[in-house]
Length: 283
Image (cartoon, rainbow, N blue to C red; front, side, top):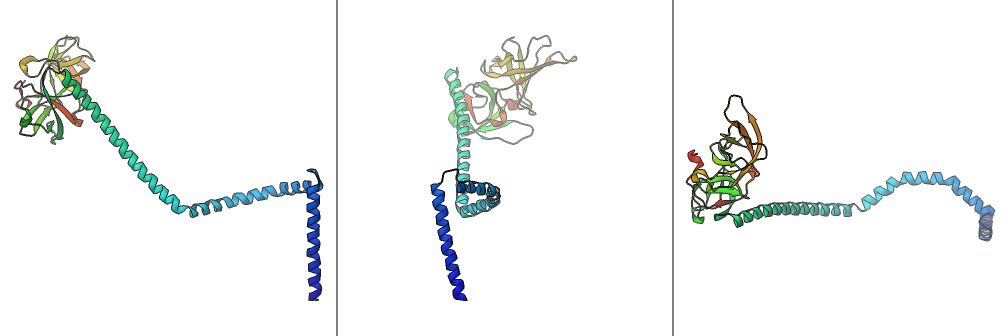
């Protein structure tokens, strides 16, 4: 019996081989519209949806396998990209800082070239903390020819005055200090007043402008030179707002300054000493 089944299986296999060869022979010899080609297309059309479903269901598995297979490479690449991004951000920050410094230094050089008086460049190295006073410390002093009373400017704009000085450093009281006071002139109208500081914001207050004045927003305000306190013509700011009180003989004028007192970094000390000192409350 086993021998019979063995011979039968052999004959079946042999028959299948001859049948397959016959099918292949007909397949190669017949045209595209032959019965075998048509049957092949029908089978493909019938099984295509199932194949697509199986392929879609297996895609997450393939993606997961590819991710796991390349996980080490992806992790190393991620670390490298993070490092490069950090370095690029640092470079951009440094370039922006250099650009800002270059702009400030250009203003200083431009002012030095056209200034009537000699000046000494200095860096702000300290900002004493006080709720009532506004000042900075610079890295120049008596050894550099700095003395009390000298004006301090940024880009041609007056920002303060040297009030204390030592061998290698000096204290500069800024215009927005509550005890400051500078004689100024409205360039368009030639009116003279006093600019005083107020710590609450960047704006200064222009006092003693007559209520009949034609002063208006945008008028330029410069040092008057009266009393020999400061050189004449240093920029102070522009009129930002003009208002009127029915009980006052003078207008209420706010002045906007083109510099930020809180962010001063480089300044010029003008070698002009008029003997005026904010800290003494002189006017």
